[in-house]
Image (cartoon, rainbow, N blue to C red; front, side, top):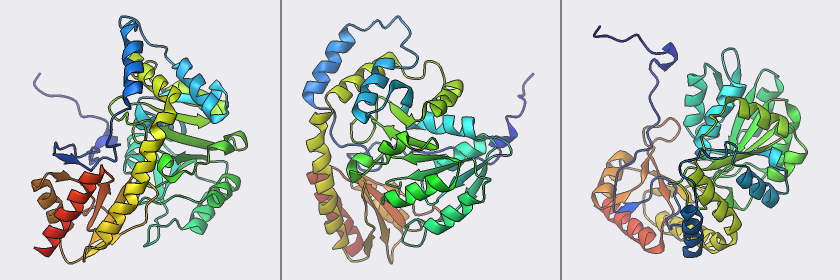
Length: 356
């Protein structure tokens, strides 16, 4: 039989998430740390891997890693759960708290995977759009959650791709106005030096998402984790894949946690370079730079098509992220903070393009 039965109707019209992976001389599109892990951490990783039993399944829950993170956060192992990057845990959230007849509150523009996961699980999406300056319409969010029919919400802090944090006072008001599960996605919190994680002790409906991919240079190893009340963690364990976090990634992440202080100077340099990059871009006529607490900048171009500029930058060897066709982000590009020489080169290239 030369035919195949149709797939799930939920997939009809769904456009797969595209990370826009395109090899380039200077990669400034995916919000990665421009430096790999420090040499002492690499040596510790290689030593640990040399004794790894590759023929054995990994600890399904990565308990050594959970213990190490719990100690750092002042929590218990039962407050921590690991995942194959933050992406797996985002999908697990939709599986566990979403579904037919259930609702997710979304605050666009934000990470498009949130809405995609909702569609895949048959979850209704309730959008509360951001204001024109990309700040959260806080009262609108509070009012909508207070209606009592939202099952879970995702608030990204700092927000991707716009870059700003959600205030602590606002997040506390959110947690107190609803029994919906509130995920605060803190994938970039190390660059903002702000976190809501200490409140996990006080709010059973708080869920904090973290990743090793950004500040800790492990985008290639795929490791994320959540911090939450043990009852919430139990529900996630019910839907997660049993061996989603492989032994190699566990070993690498454990050494990173144990040597996390070695990353602080690198994080500080990225924060410093964020200011340098913002100042240089803002000095170019026709470029509006939005404030950012993350390791990237959102810019809007005036008088020229941002998609064409993206291509011209790529032709010069600089890959940035093109959001110019995305709702609410018209004519915008997102630029990851790179090494000093990469940032300087990007500024020169963009200035030449806009002058030309």
